[in-house]
Image (cartoon, rainbow, N blue to C red; front, side, top):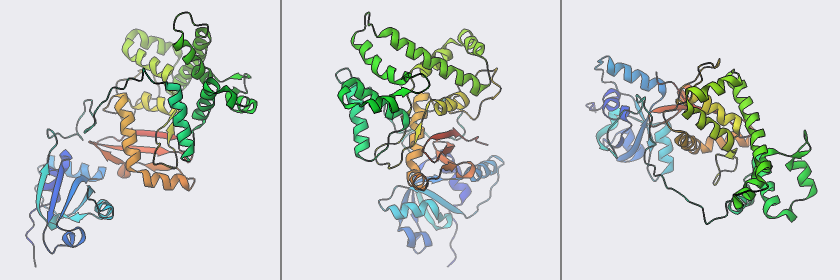
Length: 373
């Protein structure tokens, strides 16, 4: 029986796909989609970057084509196997009987958005831990991770033993002190170990603390090391950092805050058997090369495709993309291999495709939005 085509890939893109609208698809009884998925599926349409660019170009050129084609869906069904099939096999537009749309907010084309975005469907909660021991809580978290078989990254190992040295010194052996906490180049504790320990003493005795000088010295050493890396990474001299302070004090203050305060961390945790993490070098690469609010004109490296989010939300975006690709990432890391998505395989979220590269040891090497052509 010949079916009258009601929906085409062009009409669906024009009304739904370009705006990333949540849609409910009802299938024609007897169609291949009906036999595979049942009467109804729902979720967000997924496009490859090249497909989205082509459909957008056709629409802007006034192309009135009405083609049949495959629709891929990020399904929200209870049946995980059907969701996976919707994502990989999809269904034909000619199998659709009707479409209902659910808009949770104003309709907006996030793909073409150039201003700073907010992550949809998130709530900010202010947390004030004044009545908690942050050090004890962090030590407890590290122990929970180890108990669950989640390995600590190298920087976390030092923080773990540094916290033990602070809270439970009898648990730290001389071997731990020499092999983990001591920098072989200097014969002294690593600066980040001193920062972990001394920050607590200074906080407890804010006025005239005898530990403040040692803490400031450790922070200063770390700042010099990190600023030197920034200069090498951007191909600039220290004078250009000083110039930024004069020309854009806000950007300079934000940069220095990150230089002083950033701590390497695991980006994945509960539910993961292999960690993905970033250290200062990889974090600052993302910040320097892809954060639109920061740019030093003298840099010989230029700036890559910029995030349309604040620093806080960039961190959230990374977790969203990691969680969406958890199974594939874990499989690669388990096999001792790295993980890489780019170009047409880039992960789509809220109007942008993202490239990601992870080393075999779980270190996040690259993460940035692709250019929306």
